[in-house]
Length: 154
Image (cartoon, rainbow, N blue to C red; front, side, top):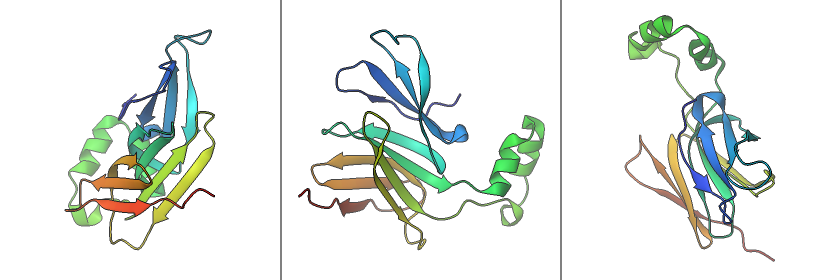
């Protein structure tokens, strides 16, 4: 498992970890009757690169790229073949789609927010956090931070 973030529940009973290569968030129980156990918290439509917990308890996940059949095939190859593919010229390597994507879940793993921009203007979101009514997304490939306001609660 490649753990790519940590988001601790408000009551500290569990922690969320992003498993990038498995396209999911995993919950590890720290307290209570489930202590020491883990479960899939959310199966995701892409590669989560980071997560965070907002003040209102939502678990936010930055999805660096959606699933891509060519990339999936490479990830299933033995490590030696993966290394060979990694050494191929960039022009012929499988490439992820350029999107900026964030999702937020409540403590029961229900999707609360799902925002995806696929115009290619901002991509490879690798960090996300919510402060008040604004969500911020960082990227390894961009020179700026994407910020957007959440809809007002009625």
